[in-house]
Image 1 (cartoon, one colour):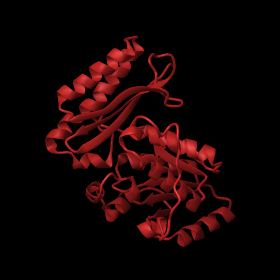
Image 2 (tube, rainbow, N blue to C red):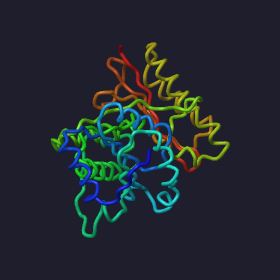
Image 3 (cartoon, one colour):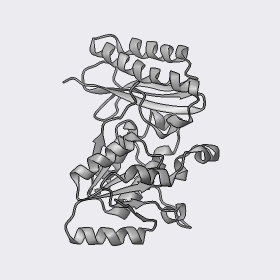
Image 4 (tube, rainbow, N blue to C red):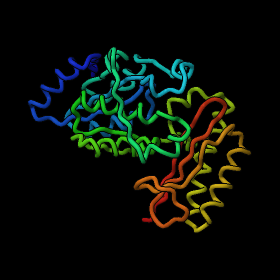
Length: 283
């Protein structure tokens, strides 16, 4: 089916008003494009749970640490549209930057608590940018449900906290991380890895799964984290921002396995930053 593309809030709202008038449920899948199977799994879930589905495509400039990083981010709208075509997507909302951040824009959303530590320590202001753009997309679309992957687990917590604190009438639906056959978590940045680094990259997931197994077996958490970090360094990861054991419920630091948690990591291969996490369930 052909996907309708809109680029303005007014055009987006025109469709939304008609759907709301017909009492149809609306879901939104926010993306920055460069779509892969992980994104498409969110779209598939959204189409199964709602009458209408909006996919957004907006490369949010304020989320990038440098102009160089922003310029390198992969963009191919035609390719993204082709990937979405088999799905029952009603609208692709692909606004220009000045539609999201018009002249004089001066408001941002700051979510404290869950935005601190982990990636928050290494990417100052990043989650403010994420919360602000997601808050705007939710307000613009008036969606009933919004779908986000668990790979960006801290981001998921930030968005859930924002929605709760601002009383936004939208349900945040978490979706499981989608992985390559070699267990590398899917990411738009994977395409930027060199051929050699792509061979090394799956060791991140393997290390986290091994760490999760050890912690479940009762091995001391601090020892597991130290050994995991050493393994990653030996394997060729250039820099380890963090590898930590956090509570699944609220991201508190856990020193022992007495509740459901996540092994969470952010690392560099060459200039490419990779994040991943593995759940450790008590059930």
